[in-house]
Image 1 (cartoon, rainbow, N blue to C red):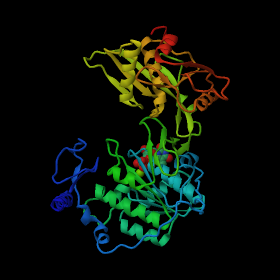
Image 2: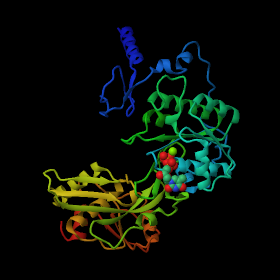
Image 3: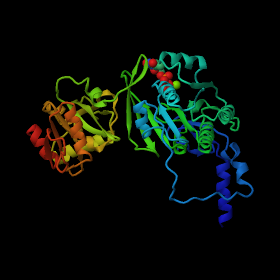
Image 4: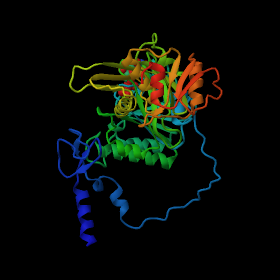
Length: 465
Ligand code: TYD
Ligand code: MG
């Protein structure tokens, strides 16, 4: 009996009017803790979707036939516009693509408004018509910031507004090339009953703005605040609606800021742009390796330089490990800038394949400078840092390390060996420890020590194994 069943499902959907802000799971009753993702205090009441937007109207009646096109096209790709802020252009995949939708997420206070005001000014100077709509600051505040950044003369149009309908009408009239919405959480649509910042408001506002962008050829940049557990409110919905998702990250107490592409329909994901927050706004860092290594002192136990690849370019950074006898029955495993699960795996491989136990020892691992690394190629550098800390032996100076470790303890070659070596050489390193198989290519001045498995590595460096 399919009909009643379908009816039941439809009923359940229409009456589900509590939504979790973290995972967007819908339920029919309020709860302190979300059943789906386990987050606390994230559930709030929402107007049911079917009543919320124009969807209800458009579903009735007959549709119109949409024009179909071929896969092959003779139209040239629309030109990208570069802002001249090269770290921003790099993360966008080489500049702004017309009629694209971009989400920039990040913690409050990290510098999103500063970055986008600078971006707006640069795009405007490059000839685009740019509107910067702020729902958080008054125009006077934005103007003051522009003055401080030395951008007061840039032809950017400001709007201090949170009403989505008014913003859309303005865009309709003004027809800009780029609009920046700071932030999507402050925008409010009178179509939707729930409060600004709620999942359905964020979803409705993002939907209206991105579809306007697609229709009109305008590009839109949405600023999104990340909630304390690291997610943009209504994250899944907004991330799926846009072409590009960028995260602006940084550590408190560090001046470095990293703009990272986590999704990009128009360029490589995982590309990073590096900035430094100064008194006069964000300054570009064109040589991130030099910056990340600038705080490195004398070679010391536990410190290892990893030759990594971020997006399309090599980036060197320092890994620091500390291993100490634990006073706890459950020793601590603390990681900053890398994956905790991956650390556990490497500890297990060291124990099982090389006979080096970490039981009873606290382990701390830190990526210096506030970088976050996700490449498995950092495995060997992590293992080197752990061993170096545990044995209290510093690695030979001027050495970089990279390579992936498999569960068997074998070392797997990683991509772009040559680029990693070239970057290391450029920064004054003379040798590298890497898995067998990678080719040094043109980086001929580098002494390349290649090893097939972790046991060989341990024996070679620490005379144990
Ligand atoms: P902001 O761009 O307002 O952050 P967000 O929009 O992500 O909330 O940046 C706020 C911080 O940046 C604030 O702590 C002051 C600092 N800042 C500078 O250090 N230099 C500057 O030139 C500017 C404009 C801000
Ligand atoms: Mg802001």
